Image (cartoon, rainbow, N blue to C red; front, side, top):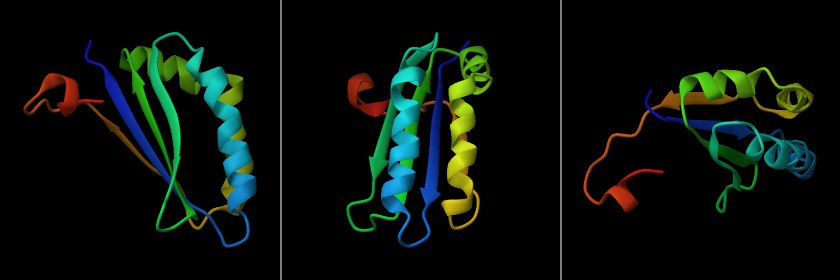
Amino acid sequence: MPEVVVIATFTVKPGNEDEVERILSGLIEPSQQDDGCLKYALHRGLDDPSSFAMVERWASREALDDHLQQPHVAAVAEALPLLEGQPHVLFSESVLVGDEAKGTL
């Protein structure tokens, strides 16, 4: 099974940035302990601090599906009222171009 890369982006309503960062940060350590988690990192926009991105890499779609059923993932629902619209989530596989070490996450 190919690895799966997930990129989830969030745009936060003004004044709620720190609270959303707190909520999303709480997902990091438990998610990193989930079976099949290869990367799980939170990013905040430099030019737009109301923008966040969660970048994940999973050993397989099955591992990702198991992760999505874990209780700690439900905490994302706590952030939804603080967002401008719904999160955008891209489920993908790497397309290797060039140097393998630099061309994939």
